[in-house]
Image (cartoon, rainbow over all chains, first blue to last red; front, side, top):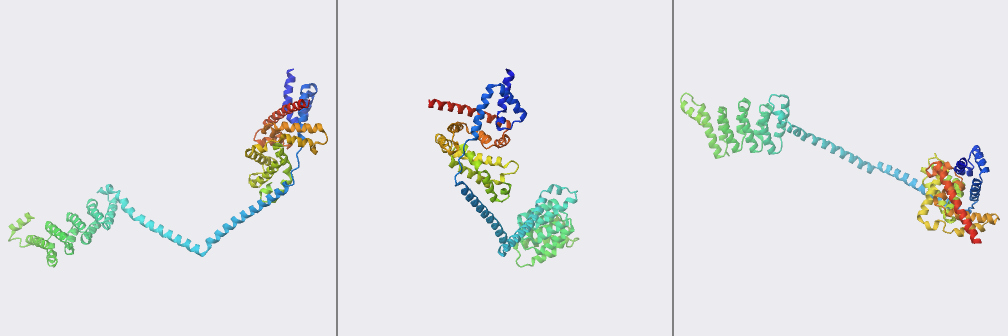
Length: 302
Length: 181
């Protein structure tokens, strides 16, 4: 009984292949052998097979006459649409390529490229300049090391660059910075002297005079200060310079000071000041044996 | 189809001549609506053109075609469920009973009409697997590929559909007999 049951299950499993006619011959024989002795399966299969066969006979009406022409019309439409699309796109591309080669566009293109190149070069140049100061500004610690000779070049460069800065504030900064980092550097000294002589701003000139006065042990500085005397036109700088001369006991300055006195537009107070200075300096220098006491007095006074 | 894909769109005519009848039958069995089926056939051929690049040539053309056909059918069913699905079964059965295809035998005509009604009562999935295997004579392997499942699963589904059809069929048969009495 159980074997038969399993076999009936098996029939169900193979039913679809059997109906479709795809069951291998050996299996078909087994199945048909089972059918012969199992009326239940026989009946079942007969019913299903009848259904299956009937299904195969299900009528399908002929499609109407319209179907074919409609299809070919659709196909033709599709073809023309496709061609139009292709032609359109190819034509567009060609047109664009041609447009690129037209002289007007060529000129515009060349102009654009030229502008771009100019912009790039200018940008590169502008970028290069602030870079030196920017990089140097981060270096004051290294520069403050007096023993290190190498890094000194950097602040020197920076001071020189700052001294030629158009902003007076920056130049003032440069002067004090010069005093701080590289006062003995001869290039810096030269730059400070030229600042003293030429800088348009009085304050900057005064500041550099201050720094240079501190460097008076250097003969170059002394000489430079003396030579600077006739070049000054500001009463403030003139009197400050006269003071420095007295302080340094620089006798070489007497002659330029006298020359200065001959200027017509000299400020009255400055005139007094210079006269005093000349007096002090030349008094100091004058007959040393006769008036040694007064000389002494003047010296202590100054 | 590969020629069509390569740009020889006019080759589509060949495919139309070869397959428009099976396709029409497929839609007709699924919808029992000849006019709608024609539109759907047209739609499938249009999609073949439009989506020809999706045909890889790896699978069989018929599988691809039925794939498109199923999508078309599903779209149509979604769009107007009421008008497409076996709404005029009685009318349909009558047509067949009196039609020339019933080759004289009244009994067979009745059987066919009954079967049509029974088929109409199956779920779309069940009807589909029967239509594809029996009426479109696709192999179970092809159906499995089409439905994206295994051959075994297709056989099971077909078997269940057939059993269900049998039940419905005999119930209808008994019912009509009772009515006749």
